[in-house]
Image (cartoon, rainbow, N blue to C red; front, side, top):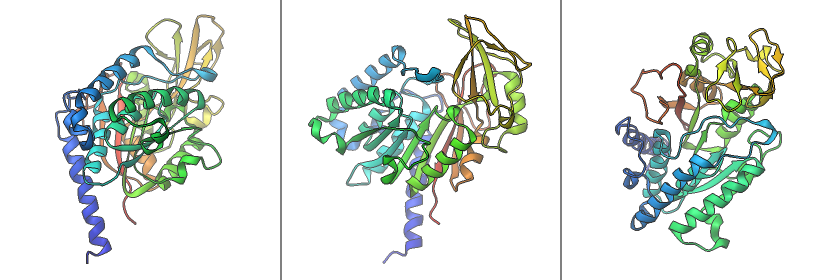
Length: 354
């Protein structure tokens, strides 16, 4: 008879083996099409051609479709399906599915348009997709249409593959999705919306929801977009849940964002809600000039050290941390993103057995 302790070690070894496999591949390889054998559900290997069609359609749609911008929310910059983050998530799900006789329960925190949730189902996941009501309605259509195309199931059976939950991730009351435990989960480009109170609710909620020996992945915007922001974050990273809110002014129709000054410590900017777009241009003195063709938005930004710190507060262990460049490629260990370009901080977290 295997002792409980030895059983946990074996489970953890399986997790580590999968993680090593998916992180050891070339850092610049983010083409999900060329790596489909590594992330597609083993039970769907005969339907690779259909899965590739779905992937191509999702990438095409991501260029033209954007979530509904309710309440002037800024949805940030998100890669098309196929980044290194996506590859690791999907390969992890497929790896666990290959050793299981059932689909792996996965939570998609902030599913957006549903592209990642769709691929997670195709990787062998039983996915719970969570987002605001307006957004999740679009995601539901995307997930259903594309997964049914490959798997071929009746509409009444969709809950065997995914569920869509229109709710907030940080509501005061426990949302419906928390009643089910998940082995794996991920959160892409959501944390820039959170206040410190939101962050505490979310991290504790997701830690309680992920099974022991389970994994959770997080992707978030970095301060490398601006040299002034990065200089500030070097001092604050890994010390507070929200190191500082960057306030960016933008002229409507332009591609660039201008940081108006050093990020504000959260306690000095509590009147500004992260992730929200405000009219007018924000100045370095804290004044807002009312210009019709300008707006400013407020962003939380994170380093890998900062993300690890935040989730360590509730008990997660970071087992892999990396940056991605503006094309979704993993940078080499200890390499920082280029200053002045969009980039992502990513951490792979593990919930150890107590």
